Image 1 (tube, rainbow, N blue to C red):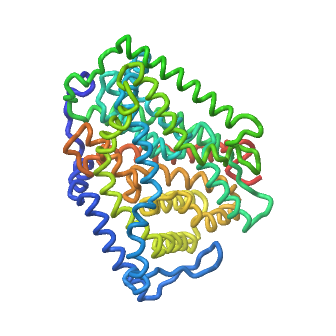
Image 2: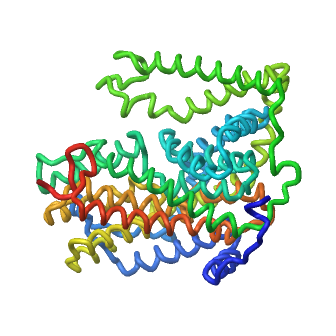
Length: 506
């Protein structure tokens, strides 16, 4: 392959990252060790009776000792519940069932070949990243579905699938909060920001569209930055792709073309039926109280809707191409995709325990409030305050998987602080979103990290955590830097960050 025949060794920094990353224990063992460290830390902090004051309600927050009698009494009855009730687990496995059926019948491969026939290999990176940003409308589902599609798009145009995989992960993870449309993230964070703003003013609130101008513009800027990074740096450093005949997907047969048409018709029928359930004024999937779409049963049920969509179009394609001849074929086709998730399921067991232990012990809230107090007591303001909030948010993202949970802790401090400095609370919210999103692919607490590693191992069997980190690290670095430059330029020019909303209060 032209773009990957040259095997260049990474620079010293990336070689060091890979060496260190590969010395990190298997993620399963890593979380076991982290649980032990967490238990000891909670015991020490609890014995010292250290406390921090919650700015939201004035209550003192102490660390709960996991090694105490109360801790042991909580741990043992909840171990199975922590695993089975781990929210991302069910969503990810269900999405893999839906997407796995589409992959097994050949729909995804055929679709990528069709798409690639209309896009030159030169612009494949731009295409993958832009689709990844647009896919955020499906929330966490994009993190499961988009990375393997990015790899397939690159395969279809004769480029290295790992480069496509990394570009897709960057788009859906590092760029998670950048959207062309209003999505659930806007709803969650704006509600938290509005509540925090009441501490200073009852008349200032944050709406779901108050970051829209900046975040929509970020999609264009980050698509260009990510594509250039993929083309000029990431892919040239990959070894030549030795995928045999799979490095270029074969042209579609007449039967596959008929299958795509059937899948297209099925997709249109499905979308039309969903529109009938959502668009009319009193449609059943609208919010029963407000009549709106955000939030609504439609938004809350977006994951099962996507799964059902995959099933409908995959069955239509499989029936026409003879991949599905009878109903009994469907469960058989679903076995292999679930087999590929065995390693992920094993890894989730200690991960789910660590997250539950972390929450019960109050360690996340304790860390967040303590670090926030440091910034506040230092009297940081202006541009240093921007940077302080950014780096604090990025740091906490590495330990707390939920962005809304982090913002619910930071907002009561930073929103009033920024308002007293003359800034709009939506501006503080926007700064948080940038940092929280940019480092997401690196966060060890993210349930998607082992999933991303599993995707990489499809094309690089011996890939370890260090291999993943050295490949993905340039994207958070470039996205974070690009976003900071864009933010400072936006602020200096005094541009609106949303309809009628500016960085400074008027």
